[in-house]
Length: 171
Figure 1 (cartoon, rainbow, N blue to C red):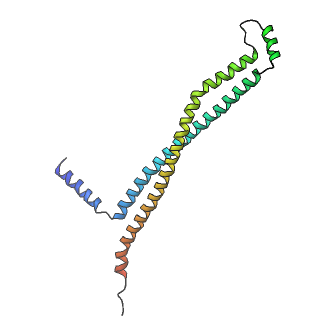
Figure 2: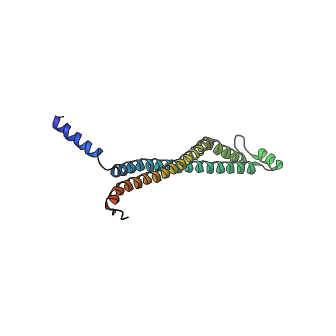
Figure 3: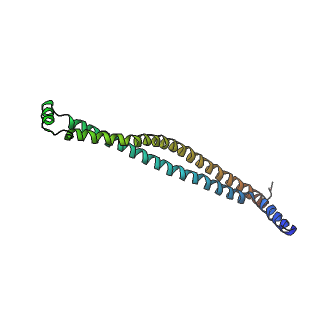
């Protein structure tokens, strides 16, 4: 960097520092708002995804319990019918009611890890929703405060011009 480049960069920086505060405040407000709303969008997407995973897991739980109960109910035959079926069935073959019970418990056992994961997703969904509410509330309050600062700066810039145009008191 040559001394001339340094001098021109320094002058540009000084000119930027000497800009009216209204312009710098607007830029800062815009940048800060972009960051806040980006974080809120991320939290919104995370909340939706976690809630969807939790709902899917709860549906698997309901379906798994339904299958299990259907298997138990279908395998509860009267004792006389079970004895006749055992006597008439060839060795090594599962009866239909035993097959229903095996299928229903197998489905329930397969879905247990998914149900546990959905409970974790439910917890994360609740946390991300609370954080989303807190962040959006804070962002709105910061947005209001920034606009009040902006209005205050604009009024301060207008005040000297109004005072200069004010006619002298005739008294």
